[in-house]
Image (cartoon, rainbow, N blue to C red):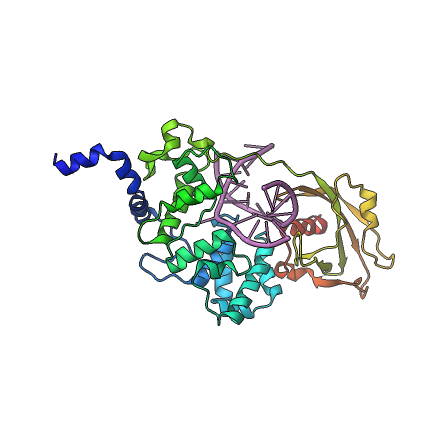
Length: 365
DNA sequence: CAGACGTGGTT
DNA sequence: TAACCAAGTCT
């Protein structure tokens, strides 16, 4: 054994810790996932694609995002095209993906980049952070991935990897600043974007929430939680309390082959999206009270209550919807603020999934 | 800061 | 199967 090797072996701990960035990049070069928004090795990254994918991936799985990303890119190949689109078109394309404020902010961001930045994304973290829908994580992610700026975005995956690597006992979200600092130590002198994506890939495929595959991990020699054997217990975080069940009614009103719909308020739950008329959604809602909130069709409507209920789970509360149906005469006027749409074209409407469920139940046998 | 904000995949 | 979780942001 050469003296140099012997020296390295005596200093194993510090040498390993310092070589983490290189170990990570080596692993990434061998195991990186091929994703629609990810440039092939050596290929130039497109800030528009990076931005679009990062917005879609906020709290949303890679598998779910894939088809939406492809649809958006085919219809709006660059930020100029998207900035010239109508908000309604964007919402219709986004329908089903959830967290609809992202779609409104996506459109607002494209308009801003077009109008205030000549159609070119800012190439600094600070500049990106000013744009709608871009928070601290996304600003760092775009800066690192699209512009190779030496910064480390910290998402849920990286929080998990780092909290295990250092066995961080402090619970989230208090531990965020410390995790951010420690995550930044995993950056090498170059390839910031690859370092970030390497950690995310590692978190999603190896350092998983349950039963992490530690034997395959390039950082396993040096992981505090693994040495203790309680990897799965990190990151520490308080369990969140479930929301209270709310009940309401949805009104499926047909006029021949058309359906009565309206647009929800711009802000708040399902903001700006299309819906069928609904009652308030309240805890301890009474069916009869809900029926009193049916739209006024000049008393011509005979209501039929469908058997069963439609259930849906939002992030912060579960919902039970009773479905009332009615079929009204041809030429019946839509009440103020509502409109008739052909049932055949419902697929193209900006209908959130809860509304699609309600409609399917109401129109079904 | 903690709660609002969708939906589907996974264990 | 009932949680838990996902490349978070906004207020």
